[in-house]
Amino acid sequence: MRVVAISISLLAALAQFVSAARMQQSSHDPDDILIPEEKASTNIANERASIGYAALGGTTGGIGGNTVTVSTLEQLTSEVATDVAKIIIISGTITGNAVVRIGSNKSILGKSGASLVGVGLRVLKKSNVIIRNLKINKVLATAGDALAVQQSSKVWIDHVDLSSDRNHGKDHYDGLIDITHGSTYVSVTNSLLHNHYKASLVGHSDGNAVQDKAITVTYAMNKWENLNSRMPSFRAGVGHIYNNYFVNSGDGINTRVGGQVLVENNVWRGVKKALYSTEGFAVARGNDFGGASHTAPEGRFSQPPYKYTLLDAAQVMAAVQSSGATLSFGAAAEGGKGGGSSGAIVPSDPAVGPPGGGKGEAPVGTTPPPDVGAGSQNNGQGGEFSGARIPSYTDFNLPSRRPPMRDNQERQPNLSPAINRHIQRRRRASSF
Image 1: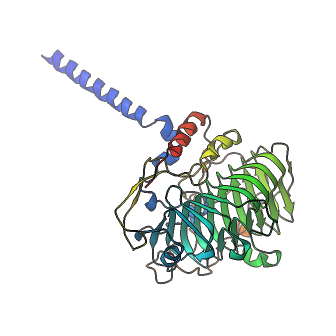
Image 2: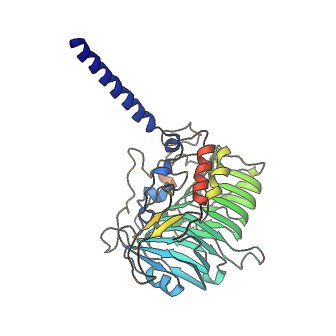
Image 3: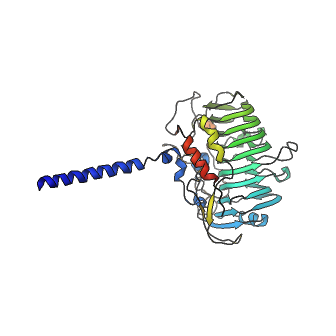
């Protein structure tokens, strides 16, 4: 009997060991490792910024507020005007010749196929704004930029499709995404900028360098196609530009007036000048310039103050195929259009997180930005931009040498199969 008891104990221990081994194996599913965004929230309306400076700033948009659906210019203008936390869902196509000013604490999300034609969005002296899954095209110069961020903080622009045409002169339209007047904690991710003259301006004039030194911007996982210039044009501030694909365009990244940019693992094809300087600086590493010229004085900004996932340059072209307004959503909660209805947007697939993104966590020892949680009578959700000092490139006393791979970079080899599955999921046709 004693021998039998020992045998039973051994069998139980062996079964427990096998079970634990299986559990350990299942926790290392290749998709979980290779595509970190698979673990994103199942409710896109409640997703906060997860990449770059916008994540570091704590950008939450309209989380915690009511959800409304709009389908006219009048409804959109009214719903975004205040600083009260709110999630605005755009349905269908809204046309006009206007600029809509966005209040603080807003998430503006496009349904499948949602677009603005001739209508630009402006974030002016505001904080904590998210704009995702929206097409904006043919905004005339008289209405301003397609997307403008001016003297604002904590803005995440993700999965947008911005364009016009090149059938008119370069001044017929203005910029696609312009980030100016000392704006901070801004990220532009997973977006498609195409068929336009002046793509993206950072810092609005050479004479405004004192204010624009505060600028902090991340550009990650974007596709830039058939553009003339400003991809981006970067004045005075600090920029991190990684895993972008530039194709069939003119002038690329222009670092100007003391700008400090870190340019990592990007790809250029059919571009004249990939990277050049007008009295600016750059640290460039891991890029595939595709034969384009690339010259800029060595800069001092070589390590951003946040975690991020860095793809090899060879993987970038496949990874950005899901850029633009390509997110697929499931059914929204019940509610009328434009009438202050509440509800949630549930994606049809959990893989809706932005590719290339880390968790937005600052490395150990990094001080949180001074304006995180700051607001003007909005229960700490962020309000009118307070003008608090934001660290600029002069605060980064970093060596100019190119350092080896760091702990806060998660280089992911052999991503192709998982990326292809990820792209196919995002391409599934779906509607609210």
